[in-house]
Length: 145
Image 1 (cartoon, rainbow, N blue to C red):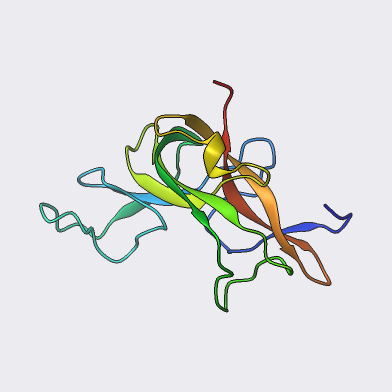
Image 2 (cartoon, one colour):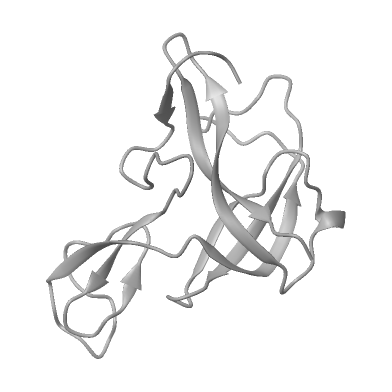
């Protein structure tokens, strides 16, 4: 990591608290359905017709529901390291909300290090650098077994 300030790679999707980052979602005021990214137009729950939501910080922890590796460089507009390095991706069931959120796993963790049911926590890690800042994104970090 450089000495540049940190900035989100995706605005408004997560807090920038390095100690306790959270994904930012929404919760339907009528039925309690959670969304990520935030929903603001109408509730997608077929049993609800609400259009009112609270913005909420989602759980920082969860369990791996599924995982895979990404061995090809994603196309633009996604920005990735050059030269490209493969990375692991995990679908994580958030602890409280019981919804699945997909994200990269921290650098240095491979699919051989992961197992369905493993506990993970959300952290911030640099995705890429530009001239002004380190662009950070949420990633999943395995907790000790």
